[in-house]
Image (cartoon, rainbow, N blue to C red; front, side, top):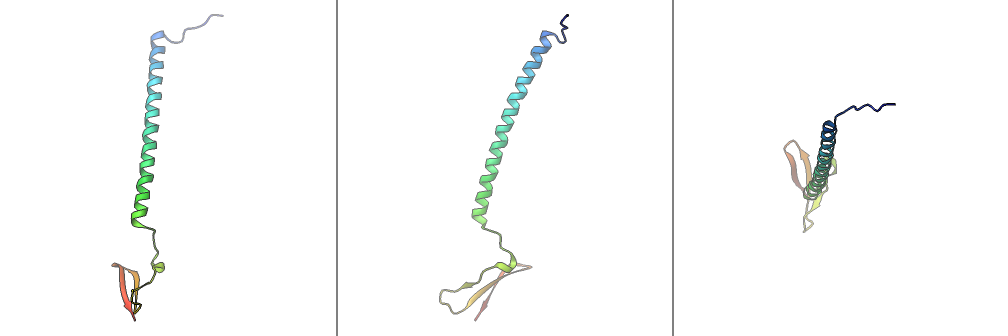
Length: 87
């Protein structure tokens, strides 16, 4: 049986070169994406520590003043968080 040459040596060499180049680019992109994910995780952790946890409007805690004479109630209204003193 005769073996057929399907591609010239030059085109095989070019195909191998292209394959190696694409493999390098893929590795670089994977490294870049991994770094972006880590950076995004770090950014999220910083934001959570700076902003705290989300509080729903009905779950805002009451705060007492140090003398204990009155309480300050916080509520979420159209203008944002507001405070109101009670006796």
